[in-house]
Length: 92
View 1 (tube, one colour):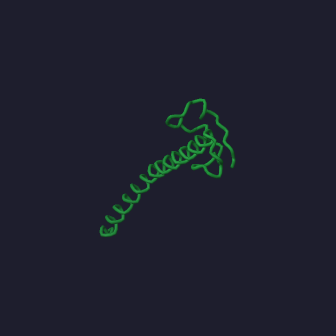
View 2 (cartoon, one colour; view 1 turned 60 degrees about the vertical axis):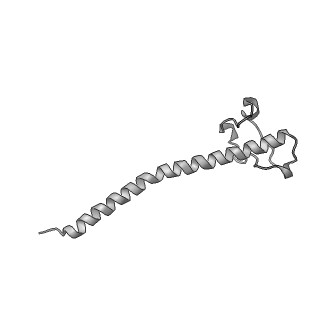
View 3 (cartoon, one colour; view 1 turned 90 degrees about the horizontal axis):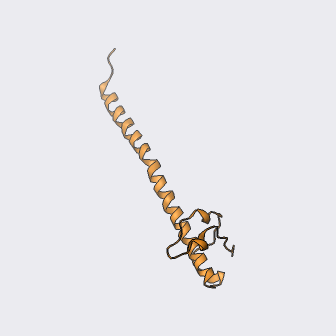
């Protein structure tokens, strides 16, 4: 019995392209998660910086540490390590 090469060739090509596309997705997802984490950390740092300056919660930019994970954020630019290490933020 003879195999139909007109079907096999495009099938192999399509399978290869699908495999390559799936192999690329995790890296894109990692980059997206890293960008989201960076934005979260910057928002928490902004909120804390303004809290330290005495800005009322209703007038601050950024956001509090809703996920209680800011202790894993890198130190914010211009912030001391003691301010960011283990900081507990207001929930306002």
